Length: 285
Image (tube, rainbow, N blue to C red; front, top):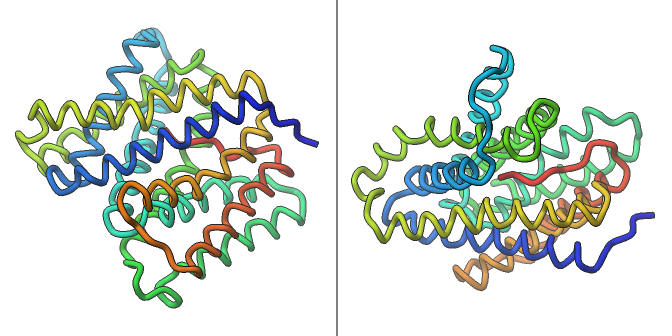
């Protein structure tokens, strides 16, 4: 039985709302600098904030540790790039729900229980209801990018566990975010050019980085001090609903009944896996 602390619930809901408001703001900037420009700003500015906060040691690690950091940073960059590419084409709530497929597959791979296969099948049914075969109004490219973001999220989870064994706190994340930001810089410059250096764009990019990375990270760490990882995973399963609500209120994105049912199935699957698994879905940064 999972006990949910009231304050932890507030922290988690605030973290998810912050993340999705950041996504909505990012999507509103696509017209000016494109998805690659926005993801470059988000990851790059978040890296600067995390490096200033954590002040991680840069030297003295083994070659394998540096390789691990590079892989972690590239997974983070691909995950965010694919997600932003997805929400440029499909509603944020749909993209977030489909992105959960990656962590659910990771949980399934580590599973030895038949019930977890049921949860993954439920999620697959939800994704199937969102596929172009059933939803012609959803862009197939956007759905494909959301699935790729899910694959990168699953890889991010696996690498995060290994990085957490080497670095204290969020130091490994700060270094990996820096790798991700540097890898995205050429793509962002090609997409947006000097517009990235516009004071107004930089200011909005900073807000996106704060809302999507810095603030949620702090709130999630506060929540984890009060609840178990399984309780954390159950609460995180609410994120697709929060994303859909934010997309509707902030961007006017409407969902059909079938889309809502599909998102609901994926949320139930995520909560079920969190309740029964030793591997819990972790947030993307």
